[in-house]
Image 1 (tube, rainbow, N blue to C red):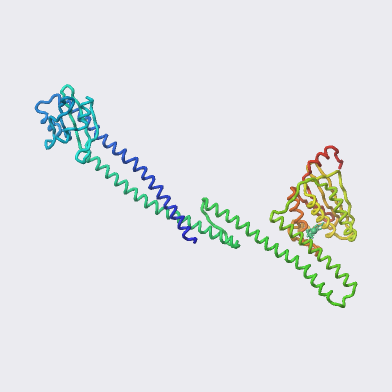
Image 2: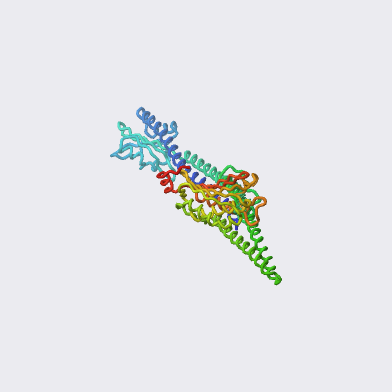
Length: 471
Ligand SMILES: Nc1ncnc2c1ncn2[C@@H]1O[C@H](COP(=O)(O)OP(=O)(O)OP(=O)(O)O)[C@@H](O)[C@H]1O
Ligand SMILES: [Mg+2]
C-alpha cells in the first residue's frame, strides 16, 4: 500500500517538471521561430529593395534591349531581374534574366501592385511550391516596372536547422528535467517515508527513538514538530503509567485491609467489642476509598479538561465559617484549637463548591499533619484586587526538602499518616488555577500557611470602596 504512494510522489514531481519544462519550451518555440522567420525575410527584402533602387538608376542610363539589361544586372545583384512595360495599367514582361520561362511572372502580384500604386512594393510570393522575396520599383518616366526576385530557400533552410536544433535541445532539457525531478523527489520521498515511519512508531506507543531530520526546510520543521510531539507524548505516557501505578497502589491498601478484617470477622470467636472495633476501622477504610475515588475522578476530569468551574461571587468569610464548623468534631477529637478570623466581606469571583473543596483539603491537612493541640487559624480578607483565604497552623511545618514537592500528585511527606494519598494539595492547586487564582505555601518550623489568592468579585471591590475595612 505504502510503496506505490511514495513512488506516486516521485512520478508526480517528475511529471510536473516535465509539464513545466515542455510548456516553457513550447512558448519559446512559438515566439522565437515565427519572429526569426520574419527577421530573415525582412532582411532579404531590405537587401532586395536597396538593390532594386540601384537597378532602377542603372535602367535610366541603359543602352540596348531590356532583355540584355535584365541579364546584365541579374549577374551583378545575384537576383532574377524582370523588366515589365506598363500597358493599360497592366505589366507585360519585356525582359527577364531568367530566359528559360517568363510565364511564371506574367501575373506577378508584387509587380501588379507596383504598377497600380506607382510606388515601391515588396513581399513574398509562392511559385511552383517555392517561396520568393520580391521588390518591384515603378519608373513612371520610362513606363516600366523593374522586379527583383530572389528565392527564400536559403533563409528557410537556416530556419529549419534552427528549429531542429531547438527541438533537440528541448528534448534533452525534458529528459534532464524528468530524471532530475525523479531524483530530487526520491530524496524527499525517502525523508517523507522516514517521517511516516516515525509517526507510525509514535502512534504505536513507542517513544524511545528520536525523530531526526537535519534538513533546513519544511520537512525539517515537520520532523522537529514530530520530535517535540514525541517528547510530550512520551512524558504524558510516563505520567499516565505512574498515575495508574500510584492509583492502583492507593486502592490496594484499603482494599487489602478491608479483606483482612472481613476474614477476621468471619471467625466466630470474635467478641462483640472487638467486632465493633473492626467495624469502625472498616468504616474508616471505606471512607478513605470513597475519598480516593472522588479525588481520582476529579483528577481525570481535570486532565481531560472536563472540569467545569463557575465564576460567580463567593463569600470567603462564609466559606471559612462553614468549613470550620464542618471540621469541629474532628478538631475536637484531635484536641486542635480552630479559630476563624474574617476581615471585612471578602467576596471572590470563583466557584463556591470548588472553593469549599479546596479549603476543606487545607484544613484537613492542618488537622491531620500536625500534633495534637496545634492551633489552627482560618483567615479570610480582601484587598483592592484580590479576595484571600488561608489556613495557618503552628505545627512543626514541612521540611524544606518536601516543600517543592507537596503539590505533586501522590506526594506525601515523611512520617505522614498513612490515611492520606497525597492528592489533596495537587487537586487544590489545579482547581484554584482554573478559577484564575494561585495557592501560596509558606512553611517553616512552627508555622505553616497555605494561602489561596483569588480575584475579587466586582461587587466585593465596590463594597470595599463603599466601606473600607481597616486591617
Ligand atoms: N499543614 C501541614 N503541615 C505539615 N505538613 C503538611 C501540611 N499540609 C501538607 N503537608 C504535607 O504535604 C503532603 C501533601 O499533602 P496533600 O494534602 O497533598 O496529601 P495528603 O494530605 O497526604 O493526602 P490527601 O490530602 O490526599 O488525603 C502531606 O502528606 C504532608 O506531608
Ligand atoms: Mg491532604
